[in-house]
Amino acid sequence: MIRSPRAVMISVLCALVLQGLSASGEREQPRLRIAEQYGIAYAPVTVLRQEQTLEEALPGYDIGWIRLANAAAIREAMLAGRVDIGFMGVPPYLIGRDRGMAWHAFTGLAETPLGLVTVEPGVASLKDLVGPYRIALPQPGSIQHILLAMAAERDLGDATVFDGRLVTMAHPDAMQALTTGSEVRSHFASQPYLSRELDLPGARLLLSGSDAFGGRFSFIIGVVSEDFLERHGGAVAVLTARIEEAIERIAGNRDVRVRLAQAYALEIDEFEELLAMPGMRYDTTIRGVDRFREFMVRAGYLTGDAR
Amino acid sequence: MSHRGAVHRPILVRLAWVAVFVSLWEFLRWATSISPLLLPAVPSILGALATAFIEGDLLRQLALSFGVIAAATAVALVLALVLVLASALSPLAASGIDTLNALLHPLPAIAVLPVVIVWFGTGTPAVFVVIVHSVLWPLFTNIRAGYRSLPRTYLLVGRNLGLRGIRLFTRVIVPAALPHVVSGLRVAWARAWRALISAEMVFGAMAGVGGIGWFLFTQRVFMNGPGLFAGIAVVMVVGVVVEEGLFSVLDRRIAVRWGET
Image (tube, rainbow over all chains, first blue to last red; front, top):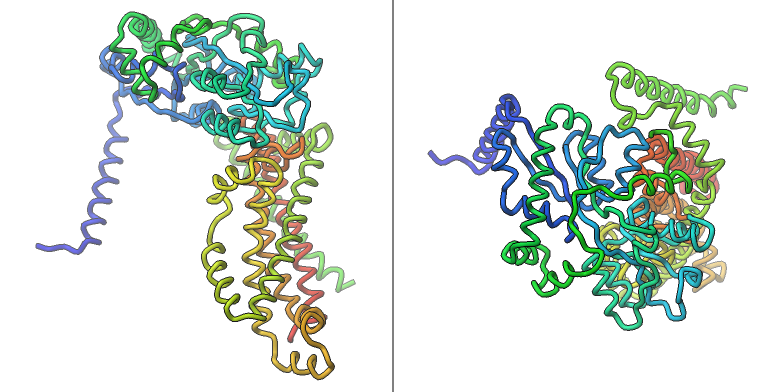
C-alpha cells in the first residue's frame, strides 16, 4: 500500500521516539561520557578514541566521546550531568572548584610550549605593550589569560592591566588576524599555531608560558565529577592507565604518530618537529595547580572560598 | 488622584507579577533542592548585581552599550532618511534601494558577524557597523511606509504655501512621518539591543570595559552563576524600561501632536 510521505515521516518519528523511550528505560550499562577539546595537547585522548582501547578495557561501560569548543562548554556539560570526565586547562578547573563544582583533577595529560606572539613593531617586552592594540586569546579565564596576568603582575605590578584589551578568538582566527594588520597585534598561542605564527614576518615571542609561570606546569589535565569518581573509581583508574599506555605508544610507534598527524590535519614532519620541541611532554603528573590557585586568588580571579 | 492611579496601577500589577515569579523561583529551589550552580538563590543574584554596580564596571558597561546604540541609530536614521528621499526623487533609485532592502532587511546581525570581523576587525567600529546594519532597514521600511501613507492633501497644501524640495521634505513630510519614525525606532531598538549583546559576546571588550554582552560573557567563563543571572536581569529591565517607558511615552506624545487620528 502506498502511503503519503507525511504518514511515512510520522511513523518514522514515532518509531524513533519509542526507541528512545525504551533505550532510556533499560539503561543497565553505566555510562561514561568523556569530553575533550581540539589540539595536539589532547593526543593521548585522541589515541584512545582512535584505537578504542578504553572500550576494550571497560566492556561493561557505554562510553561516549564528545569534542567541545572550550573549557566553559565542558564545565557546563558536566554541571548539567551530560559529561563525566573532561580535559581542560588548570585555571578553568580551579574556577569550577572555586564556584562549588564537585569535581577532581585525576590526571595530567600534556605540557606544551605556549607563548605570547606579537607583530607590533617596536615592542620588545610586556612593558612596551601599551598601545591601543588588542590581545587575542581563547577566552578570559583560560590558561593563556592567567599566564598573561601572572606575567603582568610580575613585570608591570598589575595582574589585570591587559584585561580590558582581550579579544576572544579561536587559534586559526587569531593567526589570521595577526596577518591582516587588524587591531589584533598579539596572540597568546598554543601549538601548532605558536610555531606557525613565529614564522610570520615581523613576529616575535614576547613571553613564553614557562617564563610567565616560572617553571613547569600541566597545560591540560583530566577532571572527573565527584559523583562519577565515587561510583566508578575503578573505571577512572583504568582510564588513567590507558592514557599512560597511549603516551608510550605515541613515543614509540610512528604509525600512531602518523594517524595523529592526520587527525590534526598536520604533515607528519611538522608533527614530529612539534613533538620534539623543548617543553612538549605528555605526562600524567599534575603540575602547577597550587601556584595557579594561589595567584588566581591573589589577583581576584578566584574568591578563594573553596579550598 | 484618579489620573495618577491610572498611570501607576499597571506598574504595580507588573511588580506584583514579578514578585510571584521570584517566589516561584525560590519555591522551585526549595522544593527540588537543585544545585545553586544551576539555579542561584535570589539574594545571591541581588548581591552579585550590587557588586557589579558598586565594585565593578556594570554602569560604565551599560553606558558604553547605550552610547554605541545611540550613535549607530543616529547614523542609521540619517542614512534611512537619505534612502527614503532618494526613493522619493527617483523611481530608478527606488527600485534599487527596494531590492537592497529586500535582501538585507531579513539578514540577522549575527549572520554578518564573520564578514564584519574580516572587514572591520573586532573593535568598537565592528560593533557599530553591525548595529547600523540591524537598525537601518527597519527604520527605512517604516519611514518609507510613513511617506507613502502621507495624505496627498498635505503635499498639496505644502506646495501651495510655496514649499518644495528639501523644505517640503523637512517641513511637511518629516513631521507627518514622525509616528512611523517612532515605530521604526522601536523595532530598531529591539534589534539593536539584541545585535549589540550578541556582537559583544563574540567580539570581546570594547574600549576597555566592554558592554553588557561582554559582562555576560565574563560571568559565564568565570562561572559566576549569580552574576550571570544578574546580567540577564539587567538586560530584561533595560528592555522593559526603554520599551514601556521611553517608547510608550514617545508614541503617545507624537500621536497626539502629529498623528493622523
